[in-house]
Length: 486
Image 1 (cartoon, helix red, strand yellow):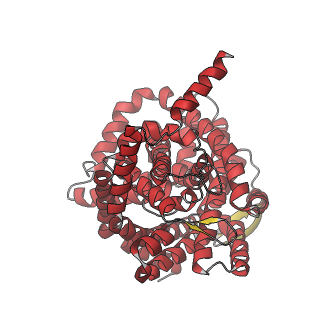
Image 2 (tube, helix red, strand yellow):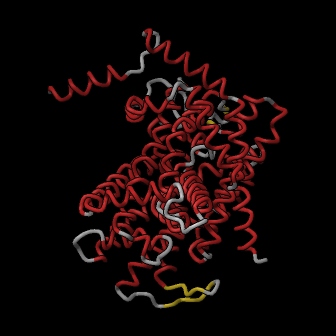
Image 3 (cartoon, helix red, strand yellow):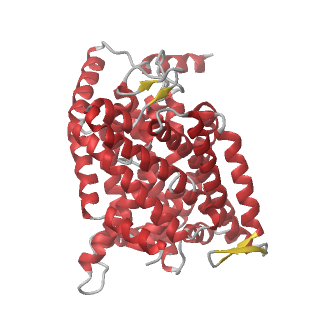
């Protein structure tokens, strides 16, 4: 058995029935115990763009959100959706959305617990996330579980979701554009695949950009993501909407394909159950890869937010899943199915590029270029966000050993440099595997601490409704109206 086959087999075990059930059950439990926080998305979005005054933390609440969004809105939204549909059929999109609905409550609970149990280091910086809410919330006897999460988080960052998958997606998209204009001269061959000079140059530029940002830590990462995350999301959403409306006549057929595929109705005779399970597995797995609800990564950024209210930051965190999957992944998936891109025998990023290239009345190269720019921004921001996550995990794992953390940072950079030259299937399977191994300790903690989530949620809304807590939204609205009046 080859290494690739071994990783694929392990990935299948980890993302089996037990994981599917655990993710959904924890999401349903937290939805109930948080009084269905999904209903609070409108106010959560307002909290996201109105920073809290006087809170303690390393970055603003919005900065923490954009850092988390930088890490979540990445290749999973473009390549992950296409690979899910290609592997599990259009029905995978249905299960991606289903998991994301409950994932909103999961992400809410993660953000809440991250702030409640965060740790202030000797140098005044903030460290928090699943390792601390396991350690402090569940007690010292569970420290081994916290260490497990930190270990898998460090591996996922350096060798999976944070590096190889992201840079692989960027470079392959750029290489696709270069192929269209005939600029694909081979530089060398790696793993049986030709690597063009375009790939080499793109990799060097991405690696250099990564070095320039991550050496500045969370402050520089937040400064960069606060600028590029809103811009990249607007560019992508506008382009996807153009594809959507230009192919609006195919929408009914696309809905039928998604819903029927979700329950195995499009399978050949005798294969309905297998098709259903495959759509469920790929939809949930790629959905988690994209929005990271239950994975335990986003609360690491949430812990650094300048806030006094753990519930408020939990609400801000929950908007990440809404924006990432309910908005962006839905648009990607519908564009793919409506344009028939999934029926062209393509794989990876080429599926989505086909939808954008041939889904609009302009030369395909224009669509390829727009998507390549979006993917480059998405994936680069994810590389930055996940460096912060992974370093915080490694910080906890090594008890703050600065020398080890610096060495790990260079390992992370090295993984970015070699990512484009690794086999695509192996890269994605390994990323999925590490995601699953991270999720287990985190989901156990969320289940165990669901009572804390319920108590904090009830207390917050009682204080807010009674007027004891002023969330600042009324004052912010008044200030904006006064500014308009001038």
